[in-house]
Image 1 (tube, helix red, strand yellow):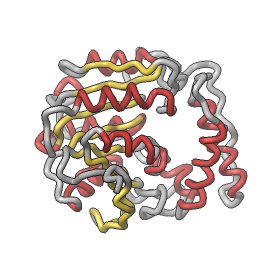
Image 2 (tube, helix red, strand yellow; image 1 turned 30 degrees about the vertical axis):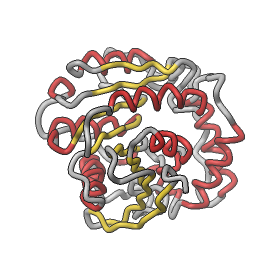
Image 3 (spheres, rainbow, N blue to C red; image 1 turned 90 degrees about the vertical axis):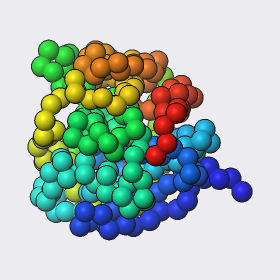
Image 4 (cartoon, helix red, strand yellow; image 1 turned 180 degrees about the horizontal axis):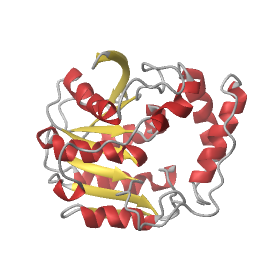
Length: 284
């Protein structure tokens, strides 16, 4: 039996909503929670990637944010929650699984969740990893002039939604030689078919304000921190990752050569190795 495979999806009542959670590996090993970016269900943390991390001695957790996948959704344009609520869902997942402290990996917009957890809930965080994230400072470079996003589709047309997701992923890959349209299309088809309301997925995370921690900022994070950034990122160019590294005391930067605003398969070995080194020595 392969103990690194999925332990199965669970629908859990967390913070008054229903969240879909899936784990991989041995619960007795250090826990790593993967927090996907805006409008991304847990499928965007590929199952094979989760298995690779679990094979290196980690208990991997991925879950569907509200308004993604099989989790609770709200009417399009009417999310009844704040950014902090979404962040507290991370701790709710940990509570439901009986985990006191975990290594938390936050991607893109949800780097803000890593900030809130690191500053306001340091006792619950064994380490932090920021993937394709930013400090949001005004002096950082804007998205690439070549970043062209497709027009939003009719959410009732599943085929059009899939094409939109594929086109968006292509744009965010930033011309990466690793962009795999066949794999992305298959993922998008699974995601659209599995999601309760893709109309809500498309808009609701962008309809909430990005509130920060109750006190402090990136300089107040004490947890060991790894910043991971692709050198082809067209949305948040590499200086965003470098600024994040510089803002957090003793943070380290792992540059993924050839990656855009994503984690394509050819960089998984580097990412997993860096993440495993970063999470050595701490147990959940």
